[in-house]
Amino acid sequence: MILSNQRYCERCDEDIYSAHRHDYVVCSCGDVMVDGGMDYLKSSGSGINKSIAITDEEYTLLMEAITDPTRNDLGHVCNLVRVLRDTFGVNLTNYSGVTDDT
Image 1 (cartoon, one colour):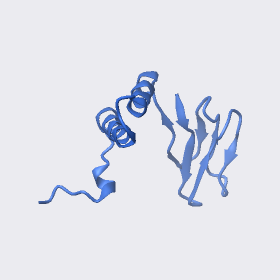
Image 2: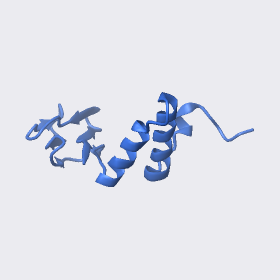
Image 3: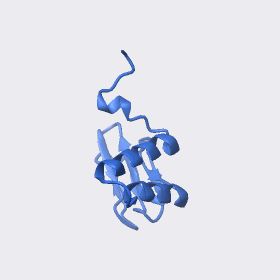
């Protein structure tokens, strides 16, 4: 499952994304392109690939984390963060200001 079809052009400092099938998008300088929306990934150029695609199993894990009927909103967020950490290797401590220093 494609969640984002996106590239970043370092030359013109522009993020571009394809929103839907056959949405062919080119950055301002013409160096980077994306196409396909959430149906297929197609891109070219020297830009940085920022597309996000996950498996059906990963999608199921994410959905279960945010729809668990035994949890409140905070519990859903905590579940989601655990799935992101354990399944995708996302370390959110860098973003929250929390450090390991004591």
